[in-house]
Structures are given as structure tokens and as C-alpha cells.
Amino acid sequence: MNLDISQDNLYLLLPSKVSRISEMLSDDNNTDIVTAIKQVYSSPLYKRLEQEETKTWHLGPVALYQDFLGEVQTV
Image 1: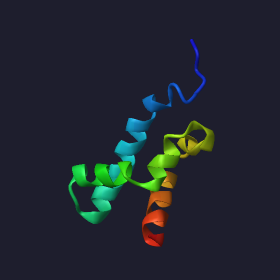
Image 2 (image 1 turned 60 degrees about the horizontal axis):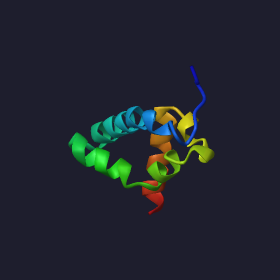
Image 3 (image 1 turned 90 degrees about the horizontal axis):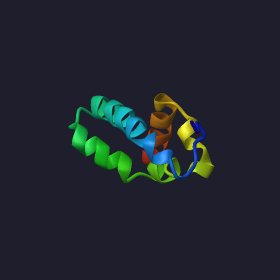
Image 4 (image 1 turned 90 degrees about the vertical axis):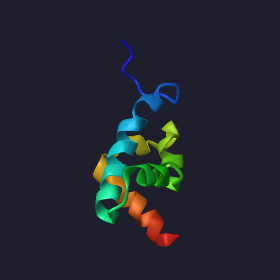
């Protein structure tokens, strides 16, 4: 069994990461989960997250959420 993360299998990790970030966003902003999911998927964070070479996928959901919030505040 191959346990290495590569660009070819990274997509398997992304839904759980996006789900948790979206859940925190929804709770903090008192918004519906669908809106939060759309915000995460359209963010610069997600662009980095889907690229294996950035290693952003190593981060936990809280760190990813903090990165997301930092991006939103700078826009």
C-alpha cells in the first residue's frame, strides 16, 4: 500500500480540510454552510491547498482557518 501523498492523490484529503474550515467559518460568521464552502473553495488558500508542492495540506484545520482569515482581512 502506497501511503505517500502526491499531486495524484491529494484530492482525497481536501474534502475533509475544506469541510472543517467551512464549519468554523459558518459558525464564526453565523452563515449557512453552503456559503462558507463556496468562500473556501474560491479562496487563495484553496488554490495553495490543492497544490501538493506547497505542503499546505500538512496544516491542521485551525491553522488553515487562521490563514484563510488572514487572507480575507488583507483583501
